[in-house]
Length: 358
Ligand code: DGT
Ligand code: CA
Ligand code: CA
Image 1: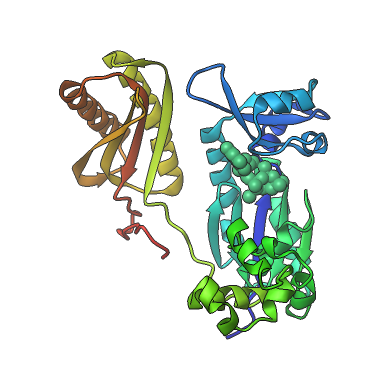
Image 2: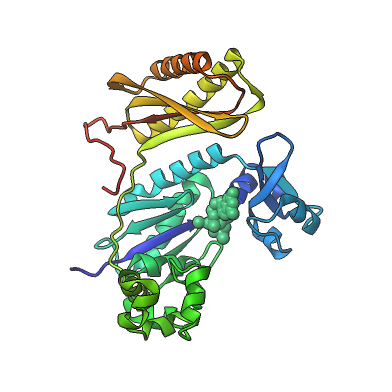
């Protein structure tokens, strides 16, 4: 096989950077994006923050209240997940033409298979092209890692942030990863870290020096093999196009309700968002699902499948509305959140979108 060259792209302080871009008055301030819990006005945990906020100790997952104490003059912004999703879609669209295969792995991360399109020696030009494409399309910065496989590319992208890049050639792999703490290896959580510590394994290099047989009893033979391979910088996992098997949007209601008009208006709003996303992906749907999160937080869903594939908003709204009617008829209780999703997605050329790597 020809030499592989894989890029890993990770957007910088993604949610907070989008907010900064959209509101220039935030420039130079610590910016924190807060999750908003069920009820309007009550803040949950920090989703992310910009680098100024990180300097005063604000971290993802801490309570927003705690964050406010750390940065009394900072900006605190409620999360806009659907909007960030649409920014993410635009970014992925802008770069999809620059590689052989694009594998989106989270809202702000993707692997790009660049094998045959550049070499390690000229990778820096491709990095610049990629960063420029994202800047031009969305005015946002990212960090890029380049390596002979996904594991190395991902470790490289976090080496130099924000707006950085790191290229690790096959020859540099061992010296790059060996000294790193074992917890930085993909797939090693606190429990495995502790189990490996009992073997005196603290760095990735320590793990690379072990044989499978030494760790099989503790990790299981397959996992032991895989983690040792990764620690030796070996990973042949392909960059695989990931397809979403459904597209959906969910929203909280301002109060728990079973008012038909309020629920219908929400369904129309959500249906528009779903249709927009479907159009961006160039897909059709056949099945419509409405999700109901009840006051006690139990979840119910009801689906309806249409006779033909379609991209029609009218059909989506009508189907969702029918489902709502029969649901209200059948069930009692107040509804807290409502969602609309479509599945059985197809590309116009008739290819089924499958719920797996393709
Ligand atoms: P970075 O990559 O270190 O410059 O900063 P981010 O903010 O891009 O961090 P990353 O890549 O881990 O996560 C991407 C986005 O995912 C981030 O902007 C917000 C969201 N996110 C990350 N961690 C959490 C979390 O603990 N809770 C919630 N709700 N969202 C999170
Ligand atoms: Ca990121
Ligand atoms: Ca990320």
